[in-house]
Length: 620
Image 1 (spheres, rainbow, N blue to C red):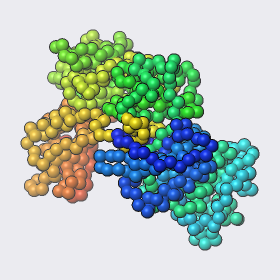
Image 2 (image 1 turned 180 degrees about the vertical axis):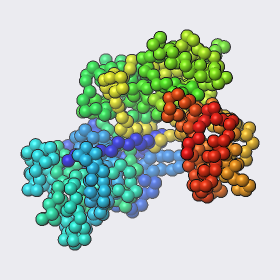
Image 3 (image 1 turned 45 degrees about the horizontal axis):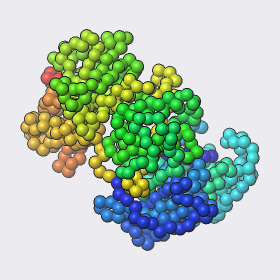
């Protein structure tokens, strides 16, 4: 009967809090020992105030009155965001992520539905849903004991005392919705329209008494008190944006083992915190220590200072604090994961174990100050690696591309067979630049640590012993307050887009461009006159030939758009499903005004085009 916590990643960032107005917390609680929830909106008006009263009521019920309130503002480039901070003790949210808990039960409107769970015992699948307005609940009681209609054995719970909500529905609601009593497993859900990450709570139906019962363990008192308050009060007019900072115990003194690791208190600039939790219910001490060692090595290789900690009361969690920047975002997820690598050349992909590859960062050619990444395959896997270089030689040249965790990381040009199994990659795959210059000069050393350093321990060849998921991200200002995200922390990809745009200009097509994203999209205005289908096929053909290397590297998509900017035709390259067929598969999708006859004609024209038949096959 535990609520289904939903994991999500949200950012906050550079700005700072103004001095706050405090409400004293009972029992001498101090905010330094409490988790922080910050709720904010762009405008502070009567609706803000009335909704905030409801939020405070939910938190008051959750903590049994043991919380601290602070009125404040978040300063941003576009003006202040009006906010209220609530400091709550760790026992109020227990083992749950503070952000997940708030997202599920505090910050959202909490409009309610009764929903039919038609899934299996392990996989939920929700069918019909019927709105449950507050006036449809005749009464709601918060009780202790064991309800008459509830058999703990049926729900895998031991006999004993429980905390539960008893919801009696009105006669009118039951008369209008008799189907709810035939559902094998009704659940109560919230905000299923317009809000993501909805939580579902199983209910025990008691049709004879017009009653739905929600049962939990005694250690869920705070959750059930908050839920009782929510069910007996109106929902919010809209949700609040939120920042969440749990209570963190930082490593210090002899616990600091990384060369770049420092005390958390030593940071003097804006920082970002990422919290990770293992997906496994049990992780051995040996596997956990090796995982921490691997993470420290990777962070040290990147050359940035960092602090390590864990959520108070949960030693099997990791909190990493770093200065705000590129590495503190997506790359940090790479640092805590089991490393998966693959090589791609002209459409053929070979997956490798990092243990089969020796990677090292070394100085670039011609005494360049920029490092490159040098790969030396083991004797066991040398033949498969050399097959990629043979493919390039046969084609008169091409790229060997390194993907780490399915992300293009580095590549090098190859036009001859590599007989010794060693290959130097000189190109930054993220930016399409030659060499690894600022602000990503750390990337070769980081790749070396990922591939050749201490690995995340494995149970077998395919399953990591520890799989970490990111359960939250919080940005802190220089003063240490949570704040909104700053700009400029993304990977600089301007050079990649500049290369693509330059190639398009060389083709001479007007009204064309590049849409940034994953993958990049080359866009053309749909032809308006003449033989439209032939013009589309001709444009796709010339683009495939001109962008051969980039398509193999980044899986670039080709789109056509109408006068309103809507995509009306889409061409997507994919790797071949047949191992011996190295050609790309090109799938396509068409929207109005293209008809099925148009689509068939365009595909026929592309199939008959011999200029790219050696490396592309057309799918129906």
